[in-house]
Length: 210
Image (cartoon, rainbow, N blue to C red):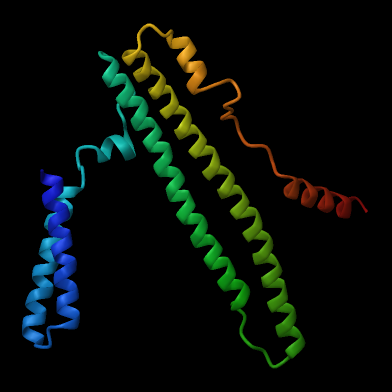
């Protein structure tokens, strides 16, 4: 109920913001409506955001507490999966930010234009090459971590699904359900280095040994 009220308040605040932007011309009335819109948004967020679950999802899902019921065990496994999933999403957005910054440095390198055109071109080319190499390696590492964390989150959710299915169908052995939901081929070990990185490393080694 509280969540529904919060969503309604946020929707009303969006309508009020659009009305204020397109229909209200009086500055005094516009300021009052902007203030009320901000209050409504804050009230809606307070009702929508599950503050009790934030410490469990982000900081600590109480791994040290004893599992007294199957429901508490499944909830703990689900929160563990949510934690890994949230970290992967944060890494995904950070990867996008790194890509945008990298492209900006490639297009607009931070080099002051010098009187000597050759020096300027050399400095600009050096920065662009260095930014390109760092961008490739950094994005590759971040994307590998992103995929790995997603696989770990899916792995824990599959374990929780197996336990819940065993509770619904106790005649099926838990071991078979675990094998069904998380088979041996479901590998969550560290992802191996890509062939691109191997080729670059071998190229650098070859250059150094000459």
